[in-house]
Image (tube, rainbow over all chains, first blue to last red; front, side, top):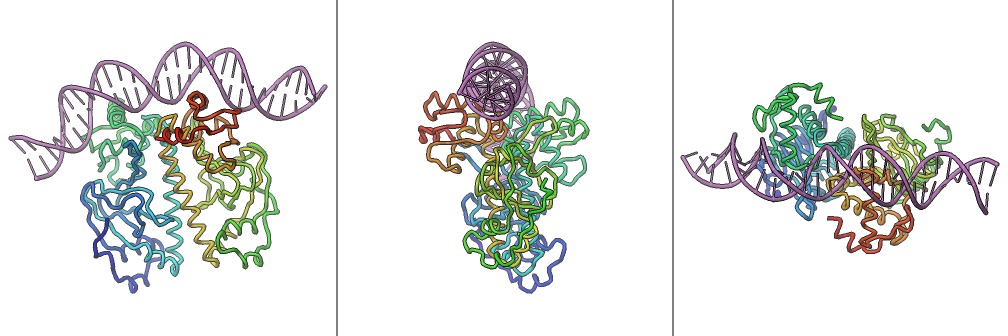
Length: 223
Length: 223
DNA sequence: CGTACCATTGACGACGGTCAAAAAACGTGG
DNA sequence: CCACGTTTTTTGACCGTCGTCAATGGTACG
């Protein structure tokens, strides 16, 4: 993917006046090119060279791997503001796709690394971003040993934290995506959500619109 | 933990002539103090300040988290040569214990970071070590969505790669450790190993000594 | 308005968990 | 070095959760 031109931008002057607090994110804003991806379009593939780093502007992204027999594991969902595709080695370990029509900032990895060499704060935040990612994945392994109900609740609580909108949850992903993220089948996800609605912990306004009615109950169910 | 003195070493002269290929590991060798931990001793605890970085000299280490209801998830096993306890933030996310009597090199994180600031190669390898760790955890999430048999086979194949000794596998950890690493019960681990022996893919010389008899079969079972 | 795609619901069975007991391995001290 | 107590591992019986297969219902988009 990304065979286009348009990726290259002159950033030498801009990067000189990088902010001190969120300089990594700011640098990507300044140096990056905005690229649109339509629903289900591949952003990068497993084992492809990791020449770019990405930041979601609008929409949502999933990273995933597919096992030999077709089972798919979704490693993470990325939402507006999230940085992804950052690798220590030079190839991507996961594939990634746009979940909905999505706008993504794309920046050359080499440019970011070069900037990190001179701007200490950028280097520090690259390190910190990688660390956050490591924590996220570690937390995810904890979710994968829980029961189906606990996994679904964990997912809802994770998303309510990350998607703005109070107790209203507008999900961009399908039941199958949720299932592959949680190591369940979509039938089990669907049934579990129905259960949670029956116990009036949540309300399914529509399939993709979920209202968290009783967070206390959800917290208790989260193991 | 680690309230001792003995951690401080003068490394300024030594670090000046650090090797170029495995400088991080070498630096820890030079700067670190060797500390013995006996079987089941805690090395560091969850949420404790991450002031030190560790490298296994001899023995084996597990990192883990315990959920509210007592379920334990082992995040990783570390064997001689492995570096662990490296964090981006300043507290540990997992606890860690010695599996057997173990010797561990301990080095101040601040010292390592200071060295990284001047020695570019050390900084590069810190980055790379963190990246390897991220990959390991990502691979682990893939294991956690498989069937019991596949998980056990994955475990055996991982360990045969990491523990020297050809097809002979001398495991330092208990069935319970393996179970908590794989998200299974120890009964299921035990039964699955018995299955694998019945199909003559492996041989249980003793509980902790396993011989991989048919790697082709094991590879096929690994999904 | 029709056609995919997506989500829900039902029936059923298997995989792996739970509880319990026996067997084996290990370590310690007499 | 053996005997004994503790820990670890194995094996058995049973059951619940979640996966599978299948059909129906809902939603969105051209």
